[in-house]
Image (cartoon, rainbow, N blue to C red; front, side, top):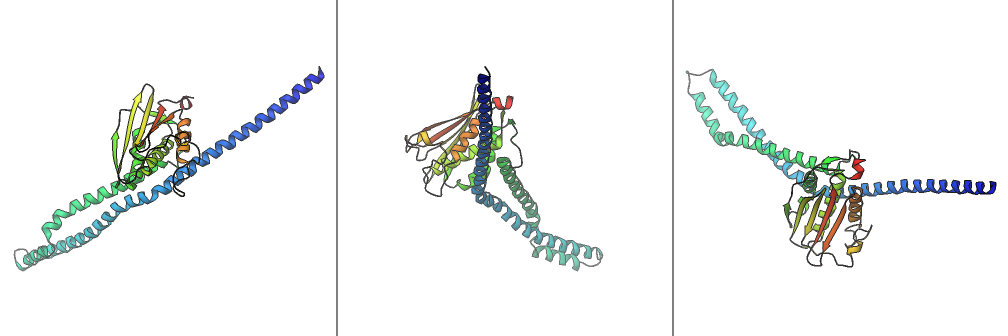
Length: 301
């Protein structure tokens, strides 16, 4: 009996040790997955930086030009005000001061300047608003300052934020079509889903040679919503389809991708208790559809 108890205690101790090792391995795996996701997100932000800089530089350029013109206008306005102030002392006595004001107004093209000043201010304000929207979209896309908080989110807002920071890079060679349905708020970590949307859009753009079309569709079915990204690019050969979500699998040339985008996207969608469906034929493009539960179990718990 004592021998049996000893063996039982020994087996229990070994089981506890194995369980401890397994927990430690799971923690290391979770940390590795988190680091992989962060690395992919930072790589995406780095890829987007050139396009975002271009989008910000455009409005800043014309705001800067407008401010230069406005500075000249303000100088003329102050000059004209000074002339009027000087003429006030001679009202009714000498017309020569009024003549000098007329000459001054003609020299500075007063009617044009008067009509142009408010549109310049409006255009400058519009440019600054555009910069603010781009910065807000980049912040909404990345949300690097926020923890992974599960909360009801507008999926369309996530898509639009992603488009705001990405589309400028390919808008000259790709036409964008949107076919949005009505979606309920989805409980999710939107910054992670934005990463999925970005990866799918990047893949679609990279599969298109020359000019092409990318279509984004959304819809709702039962207690799930779906987001679809379709392109009319090269498509995926049947032998590659089973491997496209494997880490480091890529058909791109060396230096064009590490093969992590779709693998990371697959992991994010799984975290949301969703799934990704793929349809593709060589030469006829590809369609990726992401299904997401409106209220995933992780969020409910």
